[in-house]
Image (tube, rainbow, N blue to C red; front, side, top):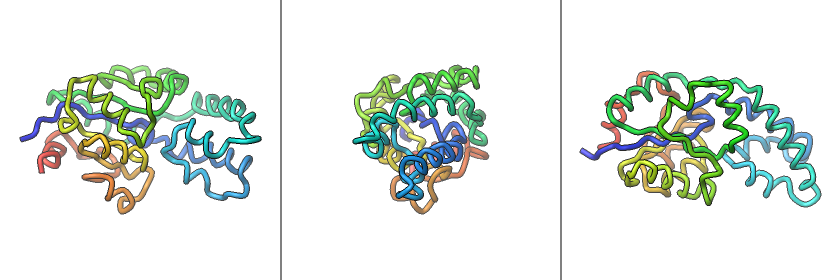
Amino acid sequence: MKQLKAALFDLDGVVFDTEPQYTIFWGSQCRLYHPEHPGLEHEIKGSTLDQIYDRWWNGPLVEERETVTRRLNEFEAQMDYTYIAGLETFIRDLHRNGVKTAVVTSSNMPKMQSVYKARPEFRELFDEILTSEDFAESKPSPDCYLRGAARFGAQPSECVVLEDSFNGLKSGRAAGMFVVGLTTTNKKEDIEPLSDIQMADYEGFNYEALIQKFNV
């Protein structure tokens, strides 16, 4: 059997059920600044803030970035950070079986401060937390997940990535890791080509179920 040393979790849509809330926020901003592009809030899912700005808030809209960032920080400070169903039980089971856990997120420290305030226990739930400040390149580059593995001295073949967005799934694939796709943001059939297994949440899922799939 292959040894599973580390489980690397994205944050939004994987740890927290926050994607519907972000759709509301970005929907309001996209309608305000890009009324000519209906549904843009769905297209930018899984992109970092820098990627969103570089693509959609450029030219004359560059001067609006500061305003949007302020609105986003205020929104995130009031968000409901509800765990994906079954997450805490699943993580405790991983720890009991000697698997290290890390959050590997494109979120920045201001966002994480809001998370820590809303969820004081969050930092104790994971062994490591890596944010956008820790990476040289954003997803879909594998850089973030390779750095996550390095924190535990693990090889890519000894790691599992848990992701929901297309960029995140591509990042895990590019890192050469086993990829679990959460269907919290995209449909199962859409993420199947980018993930080894797919699931809606962690209810009824444990270390033994994961290790069986990991070793197929």
